[in-house]
Image 1: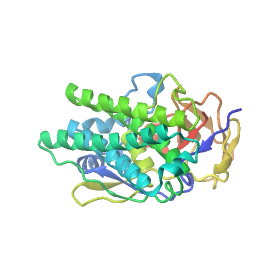
Image 2 (image 1 turned 135 degrees about the vertical axis):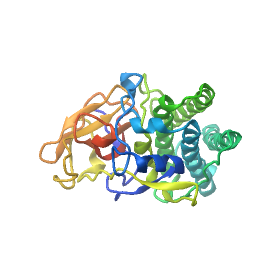
Image 3 (image 1 turned 45 degrees about the horizontal axis):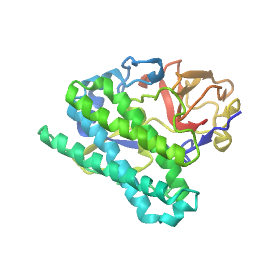
Length: 322
């Protein structure tokens, strides 16, 4: 059986964090009657492979809000690469087995993310709105070595693809959708390249997975320390998943919750994956990692067999079966 590894170190045991959201989005979340901390409900997924759809309340987002949502993610990615390449040398990456050409291509990924930032800033300003500014980040855990940088970059690019897919159904303007589409295809190329350079199958599945805004912010939250006043407001991320055995996750293995009684009301471990969502019942604080998982998989703890926001109690965490 293929092994499943946790890529974002410590993500199962992180305390609940507050993620940064564009101001308009945060105001809409706060005013939603469906949830005290985040909007509930979901937009129907375009295909079974994108069943982790955005919350229905997020449909009130304007196209500029969505562009700022994208810019928030691009700021994070661009800064991550800048800090990583400032810290590690060509030789550090080549010591991992990468060729000089692959390292240069990896650097090109960072340069592309910086271009995405300037392009989105111009688009938002051109629409007469204020672009969100970059936050202050803490990438210490992800930049302990060149190896950890590459592993985390692989996950960040996957989450970037999922974020764009999750936002796509909310876009009203065909021009904005086309612009977002031109970026998400490049994000997918980034991820395929990094997977291939790290020895993984570049295209592990026939589909990619969409994530709603709150799930994306939960994954980004661990890196965000603070954001400029007026650019971002805080919303509550989902709590992290606490396991007794986070470093030994494998297909067919029983995952053990650190506290079988928490989160209260958790009935299922949800595995949100390209082939469709799988829900494994939680029995005595345990659930089984199912077969058939491919690529980057998002694990959540839910009340029911649903991953709409008001049914999610913790997560997502990222695992990789292949």
